[in-house]
Length: 128
Length: 376
Image (tube, rainbow over all chains, first blue to last red; front, side, top):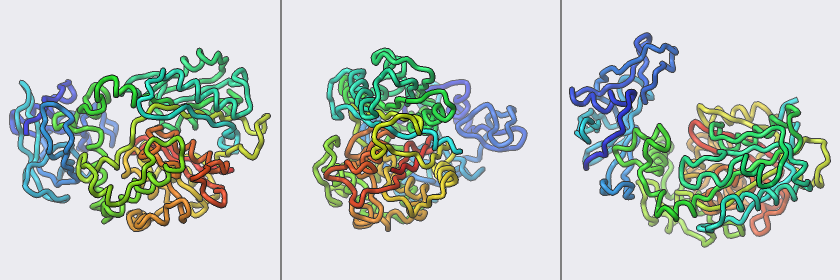
């Protein structure tokens, strides 16, 4: 399954383009190290405004998943999986994504890979 | 004195509610508002406040039939305080705003309404609901866009996670849709009134595993309006007045919302006779029942198994009018309407016997929530 090209903004671009260098770039507070996703210009933990994209390990566990069976977009033929992956860096640090695997279970360990979408994006997905 | 004691729900009203009514949303809104004002025994000239969610906007198709300015203009109202907007803790946050205006002495009689025309609007744009939720509607949805997430995707993810954590099965959770549909049979306003069985639920079309068609609420056209009046002012017969015993609101969690409400009353969860909880997707019901402490955490599956405890004649009747699943997506105000009808003893074929005294109601989910305890 291919992905739709995400809308890039200054704030979202690191997440969607870090894959060009094999990096899952997640917002991180430079002062206290708290990870922030989706990215915002303030650390919600210590309220520092010194935040920026940082490479996460790319490893996580499946928090939840679903098999979508409805054709929401003409380009995307169901069924396809949508999942939430909790990254190992921080409890509650969850990315909305997909998992490519024959069997998916909550708690399953996965790691990130990337696939091109549109001209500039590398959409993250996860595999066991 | 807590602010809740300053105001009473003095009048309730609604428009025609249905699918593809193809009616002017302003007219639907006027119909409901005039009915509520009349039910309160007031003239429109006496309304000096208006409060609504979400106000005049079109963030998604048909989400709002009218804003404050339109209602004020068409009904010829002269107001001191009014408010309409979407950044509120839950749709019933608009009721909280009315309470605050009255408690603050800024208004005596506040008209509150929730007006929708999603069914007609989506029909006109040939299935507008069937589109990938894009970043243009709400910023947060851009993160799911590349993967083809739709609104039900989020409900499905929450549902699977809840089933994993609680052990609840589809057979158990089926009772939410089945019970709502059974209750809807006694509600002339409900759009789906044909009974469904657990088997119908288990074999229903899957939208996004484990969320099926019957787990989704139904878009409608309709408006619900209420009038809140200053307690102690001239009001219609006290027998039909509904009091707000306690309110709760929160951004962080449903539990925090409920905790606020329970901290503002001497009543306890065991005192609640009926619950009208937000059911945009059926998964919202266990989440709210548990947050409200009406059912212990993760125990909703066992509690609703077989359906008897949550039936109209059960220990805790739930969504007695059919909820948003069967009565239609009145988006937070359906819970308010049904609670008031039941507390007044005017529920007709679906009236809970031994006229209930305490109703718990809620609106919203996730970072957007309100809950109220209503009494007669």
